[in-house]
Length: 232
Image 1 (cartoon, rainbow, N blue to C red):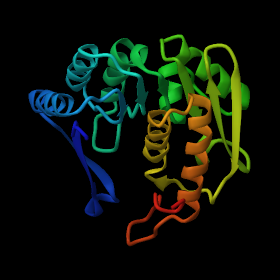
Image 2 (cartoon, rainbow, N blue to C red):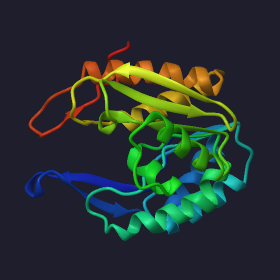
Image 3 (cartoon, helix red, strand yellow):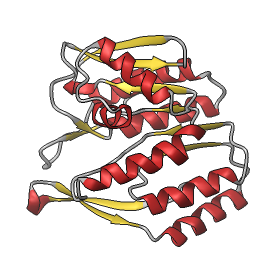
């Protein structure tokens, strides 16, 4: 089951930037009501919310029932939104969503924003960002280095509130691959839903996502896309 919170499409006439259209908050509330009434859901992945109004609706819905796991991919902004939207969304996420999360999976931009750091360029920086975000209330923080992080490896740090684990995989090229972040968060969600602990779920998800990047799909767009069937 899923709930559409916003519609984002690529614009090939504008250098493949994004068109961002938020869904009306009442429509979001109606979708959540239908999904949670039809099924006994206890694990959820939250991706791009996009606006403080949407965050209000989602936070209210989360508070209405117990959840075994809440996985948050804290997408703050996409091309097509005003830069200030990231700040508004950041504030609302901090206050209303992150304290509820089992695990949150920020990329470098999101980690810098949520942690209030100007740069993240070393493993110590990744750990510090994870610690700061952990202070906002989530059980675990997975800060993803991605292709922007210096070095030959894609380095992530998983912080559990006390200890940090460094996860590595060889980088596959230097260009971003569309869908990597949401694929990883979805894979974490699937693993914890099946009973895995968060550390094991994150390791499985990193392997799954790396395989999808290796077997990525190319098309006419100036970027490749993760193939989620690579591990099947």
